[in-house]
Length: 291
Ligand SMILES: [Zn+2]
Image 1 (cartoon, rainbow, N blue to C red):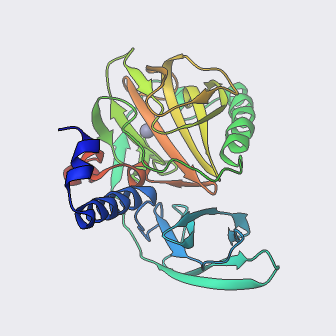
Image 2: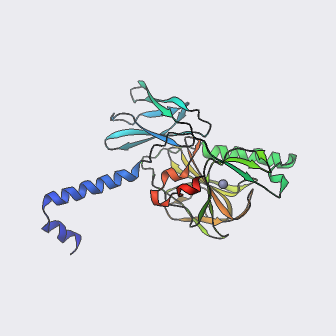
Image 3: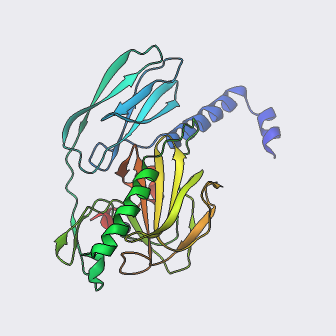
């Protein structure tokens, strides 16, 4: 029996139930889950005004999504966020402002110790530093990008078939020297494995950087940017629109690496957050990989 025939024969109440279930399912995927920790995110209901309000966290514009007849601010929390009360400022179209508070819980991320044979990747020389500073300008510019877009795709797929090898947020030590925490998720796969865009977006920047190697940045809209590092090949161009599942490049071992893997970062309002917060539960790293 085809769907049309099924609808004709079933009671209208059943069709209504089916429609409700469909709507509930669609809504369940639309907004990411609140994870109020450093490197997590919070989703705050901010009213049902007719016009879209603007939300800011630490003066930086945040994502605002309409869902279930309500506006929601989706706020990325930087890894350096202190535990305790924080707030966003929401400004409505009539310019009135309101404060919405939320509590961030402390999270202890484990340590990771890595030994690199290439000492320049731990203590770069003066020439390298010039390049690193130049890279930083490009990377910062890409992560601060803002594209106004109402339909932001928030249900990400895993960008590459592979094994989760390093969790998000690890406190890192290279050759016993403390460095910045791991601000992404590593997926190990052999060189040449295709990398897919986890959600629709626009390629805003790509290039070769000292630490990150061959890198692509995708802007998904409203301050949600994803970054793919250590690529063997880049198969997209700046300005190119990509759909979920499109191949953007291949896994490699360029930049500061110990082997072939994809380093995947997700930035929300310029805060690096755990990429798995945007993935379906079954695609996320297992709890034992989060150590
Ligand atoms: Zn990584």
